[in-house]
Length: 313
Image (cartoon, rainbow, N blue to C red; front, side):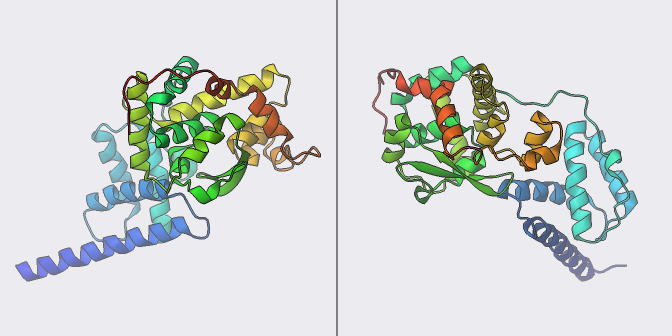
């Protein structure tokens, strides 16, 4: 019969091995290529689910992985969720030198349409018109989001040192690079009035919620700053095409990878790598200036704002 002391010792060992596995995953995600904090957190959540389910101390076996996905499916998780977890757990296995029995073609496939909610142009126009109801912080993040379509994590990374009177540097989350943009004249008073200091992603979600509530715009569960990003891409892309400008400019403006720009607009990933839209003219800001001049949401900031009925601090 196993003593209580032995069971406690085994439980302690299991916890230690679990932490070791998670630490190896975190190190793998941080070097040599550094993933964003949101990515690291997402992988960690999936890894914890797997390790808490595992019925024995690591290492995990190929049968464990198969049984885990069967269990997750029995728990009514969608194929989209299982596909995400497939690649997360693969990274956990690789980080710990566990045998991974699958190939890319084994990943679950979802037939569901991706959930990608977007605010309408009318929504964004209404929100910008209500800007006098917002705090200085809310106006600042709304201006950045509706101008450059930033992700929540990118908004959270902005600090006062990232911009001056003329330009702002945005830290692109998925590529881990910096992109410099011109600050449109109409937004300069908004930038001068607020000095951000790395708000947390959760705090940014609260900012988004308050903006929508004060403007009287619906924002169902699952909506967020990305719901602005999708419409910024759509609306600015439409303006670029309507004005006879190169369609690929939207990719450069939104911070896409060169490979994605090549695939989307030039038929091959490497064609994007060799493209240099910003450097193709004597004025490196020519592309930026032209987009600012036709940006549909910047025009909204030129219109008079709705008068606030309540003074908000």
